[in-house]
Length: 432
Image (cartoon, one colour):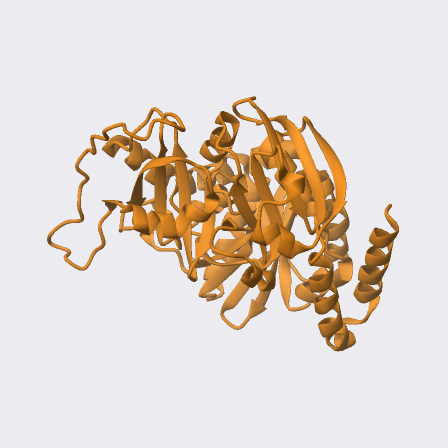
């Protein structure tokens, strides 16, 4: 390990060893230490084949944390790539101009603390949250309970004979931490796992309880709930031995359903669920959607993202990884279509159903130009259906965005050669 890494790891271990009752005194020092360290991120050049198109791609990642770098590598390339560490640099060199380290790369992603975004100009890139957080309103209304996805979970619970228990003893907590939380987190996130200490998780447990799910009398998974009046949070979960077979059988989905049933029964009005990655195809984010999940905020860590060269591989990455951006205090989804496609009514309807998320101001659907030099193609725009005239206060459901508006929103992404942009705005349609 690099000597600087060892010093930082030691400092983090010392901070975590401080009793929580007095940790607040050291917190300002810890925060400023992290902020200073993030001013000199690691520079990594990562090359391989984009995981969906298998086209060659080279990316420059300015990494403030190992966990985020590993996540980005896997998102872009899967498990096959070459990563080369080329040193460290000052963050403002990354944010104010295309850095020398990125020469030859088609994509630049900087892992940035939100306090440092003020150093970036409008063209530095778009801001993708590293994580988004959300909540579920309780009790769930019929628009949620009547969804096919919820009914499927309830049928599976009955078919498998699953049950749950509410426990508050330390022995059960130890069992959850060692046999469910740790193995599941390590298996789910690998080297990118951010593992909380037993002390940190125990502090939340002391303000709440565990929901343990049983199959044929044996515990298979668990969810930790913490309470603040009528507000509950679900910060941690786990599966016995990290078993993916149990996950596929419904160990997690049934745990969510049981936890929600329990919270509704005791009168909780809202459940804050754990964080999800801010990519619209993310499995965790899609999973939470079926329970009425609504995005409410984002983590302090951001991925400042910019396209340096609009290659076919870069286009494929953007097309295969629709994402959430933050702009002017709002969250927007950004979706890219294949260069040969224009946004038809049916295409927009399918995108809306698959990728919409409650809490987004809109989905921005972008169509590429068919080629970087073909700027003269005459675009035939299909008329888009407006909101019902009986609801004059409702926004347009589908709306072409003028260039000035979409350029202000996503222009910082760089060389992406957009032809048309359509906004899909939320309405009262049901999400399945």
